[in-house]
Length: 127
Image 1: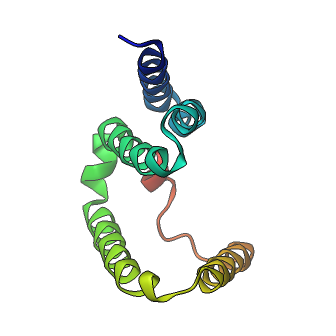
Image 2: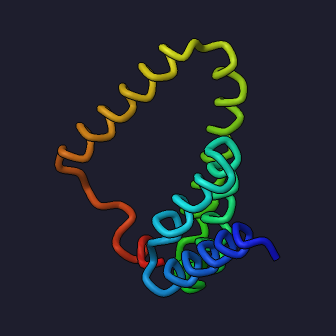
Image 3: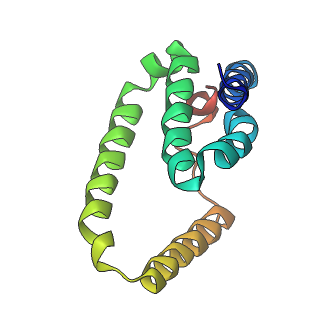
C-alpha cells in the first residue's frame, strides 16, 4: 500500500474515531491531509460525504426517535435547498454568489444576536 494512501486512511480513521467519541473533530483531523493528498476539488465533496456518514452513524438513536419530525423537516429543507442551488447557481456570477453568501452570513449573525424563543432545546443537539 502506498504511503500517501496509508496516511490518508489513517487520518480518516483517526478523525472518525475522534468525531464519534467527542462529537467534533473529523474535519479538523482529516481535512488537511485530504486537501494536500487529493486536492481541494476532490477533497471537499469527499470530506463532506464522509463527515455526514460519521455523523449519521455516531448520532444518539434516542435523539433520532424523540425528534423524528424535526429531523424529517430538516432533511426535506436540505433537499429543497440542494434543488434550489442546482437551479439558480449556474446562472449567478461569482460576484453574486459571494454577495449572497455574505448577506446570508450577516443575517445569521444578526439573528443569533436577537433574543429568541428556544424551540429546539438542548436534546436536539446532544448528538
